[in-house]
Figure (cartoon, one colour):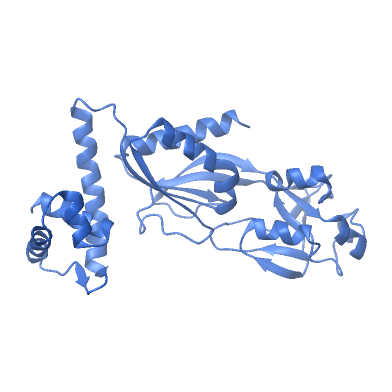
Length: 298
C-alpha cells in the first residue's frame, strides 16, 4: 500500500476539497485525484462520494480515515523519537470541553498551553452535546460525572461542589426555605438536563449520613448550566448548580444559598481520552499541564 497515498487521502478529508489539499501538499489537483483513485482501486472500495460541491466519506471511507489518522500519528511520533527534533512538540489536537467548564475554568489554561507550544494546533469545541470520543477522533474530553466506557482512560481533575440557590425575589414570592420539609410545592426548580453530563440524583445528606431525595416540579428545563443560572437569578425557581459558577452572585446578593447545613454529593470532573499505548507527546503534555495547573489554582 502506498503510504503517500494514505497521507494524501487524509489531507483531502481535512481540507474538504481536492484543490485545497493539492495546494497544501504542493501537488497538482490531477495528481491528488489520481493517487486517491489508485488507493480506492487497491482497497477495492470507494472511500469518498464526490459531488460538485462537497466530498462525503462512505462508511468504509470513515473507518479507513480514522485508522489512517492513527497510523500516520504513530509514524510521525516514531520519526520524532529517533530524529534530531525529538524535543519539538508539534501536531494537531482535537479537544472538546463542556461549555461552562471550558469558558470559566479550563479555557485560560488551554490558551497558556498553546502559547508555550506554538507548533501545536488545536481544534477546540465547547459544547454540551453528547460526544463519541473514539468515533469523532477526539483526543481529549472533559467529562462531568461518571464514565461508562471501558475503552476510555479517565484522569480525575477535581471534584465539583454543588449548592442549592435561589434569588431573593423568588424566596419573597414563594416563601423561605429553612428546612428540608420546606422543599415542596409551590416551590419549583430550574432543571438542568443534557446527556453529556451524568449528574447524580438530587439528594441532600444529613450529618448522620441519611440521604433525602429532592423531588420538585420544574417550570423551566435547560441544557446549559449558564441558562439555569440566569433563570434562577430571574426568579424562575431554585436551582442546584456548581459552587464556582454561583460564587460571585452569592457575594453580590443576587442569589441566596439554601440549606447550607446539608451536604450534596460532589461530582468528579475528569480528563478522558482513548486508551492507546502510543500517546503523542503533545497530548501527554496537555493532560499533564491541565492536571498540574488546575491543582495549583485550587
